[in-house]
Length: 67
Image (cartoon, rainbow, N blue to C red; front, side, top):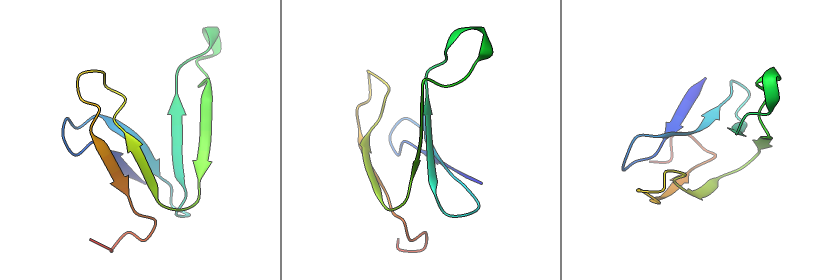
């Protein structure tokens, strides 16, 4: 698995799974420690950093060797 971090501040945003899908998990719910948001994404992703002091626009390509 590959972690996709913010290019500016280094915060972990997404995880690329072995099958090529991106996984986004956010928040925790109750004592079970399950994420409130759990999304699998097929394709390229463009997202702002979640850190309030950063908010950098990051682009993560679906094809890993594009850059």
